[in-house]
Image 1 (tube, one colour):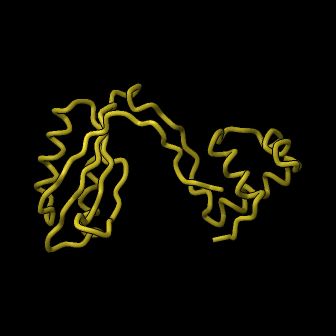
Image 2 (cartoon, helix red, strand yellow; image 1 turned 180 degrees about the horizontal axis):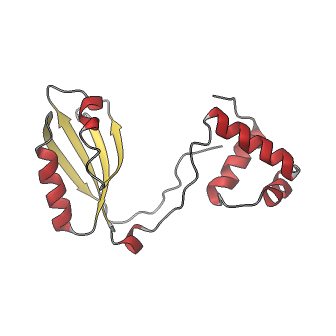
Image 3 (cartoon, one colour; image 1 turned 135 degrees about the vertical axis):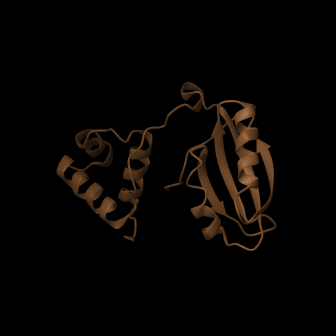
Length: 149
C-alpha cells in the first residue's frame, strides 16, 4: 500500500465527508488542480487505500434500526472457518476476530427484537459456535469510520 502524505490524508478526509464531491471542489480545498486530484484518487484506489465508495444510510430509515454487538465464543473451529458460514446472515454488518476471551464480534442490525432473537438462535446452530453474548445498542453518539489523519 502506498505511503500517505499529508495531502493524501486531507483528500481522504474530504472524501469521507462527501464521496460525491467534484474534483474541482476538492482541488480548491487542497490547492490542487482537478486533474491532480483525479490522479491522486486514481493512485489511492489502485493502492487499496480507497477500497470502495458508499452511501451512509440511516438504519432507522431502512427499517433496520435495532443494532447489537454479539460476542461469539468458538470451539473446534477457527474464526475464518466460522466466518464462511455467516454469509447467509444479511443482518451481519461487520465481523471481527478478537484477542481475548471471545473469539469474534459481530455488529448486527435487525428490524425488531424478535428478529434479533431469531438471528441469535440461528447463530447457535452454526457449527463451531459455543455461545454468544449480546449487547444491544441504545444510541450512537459518534461513528466516523476509519481515522485518516
